[in-house]
Amino acid sequence: MADFEELRNRMVDEQLIPRGIKDPRVLFAMRRVPRHIFVGEAAQDYAYGDHAISIGEGQTISQPYMVGAMTEALDLHGDERVLEVGTGSGYQAAVLAELVRHVYSVERITALAVQARRLLEGLGYQNISIKVFNGTLGWKEESPFDRIIVTAGAPEIPAVLVEQLTGGGRLIIPVGDRYSQMLTRVEKRSGEIMKTELFPCIFVPLIGEHGWEG
Ligand code: SAM
Image (tube, rainbow, N blue to C red; front, side, top):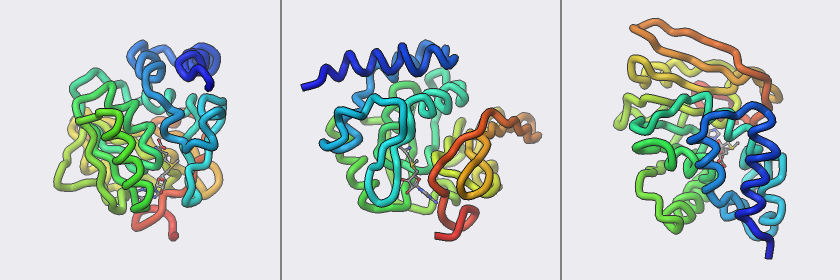
């Protein structure tokens, strides 16, 4: 059997650090979370490769670098309540759970949400809540959030998500057309909204009201 811990450390040393991921807490979390658990048995040997992997239902677990870059862009300090839109495999939620107070994650496909919940409970995470819902509407009952991360590509920034941010909060979201997007940071500062384009990316579509048609 592969030495997953060694593969994980190599992933960080060869894919993340050389591309500029610096936040020591993010690097620590990614050395820790067992990504191979989230990809299904057949793909476990490829889990730490420099690419996205299919997780069924037409969806993917993002490339390790993308998870690292988006997590770093959230600028996490430890006490945040974070909303993730697009639970998928649950891997990004686990990385976040290592770094913040509580992760609220929303997934529209029931089978993925059920599987992610099972895996995350099995790993002992107690600071992750998962709901099957259209995440373009956020999670009103638990809002406001210090940070929001959207892990699917949106045609535009859903205003509802910006509304559900705290003052001083930030949202990281891929925005663009259906097949290519720009990773975008939205900061809410004393009522003002500041948008910054970070770098180009490719995500599966964010489906639903305030997203793409399914
Ligand atoms: N963060 C995930 C991980 O760590 O495996 C990867 C997410 S995958 C790239 C995008 C996910 O967003 C898919 O599971 C998809 O079903 C989900 N999704 C798309 N539109 C959504 C919506 N409106 N609400 C919630 N989830 C959505």
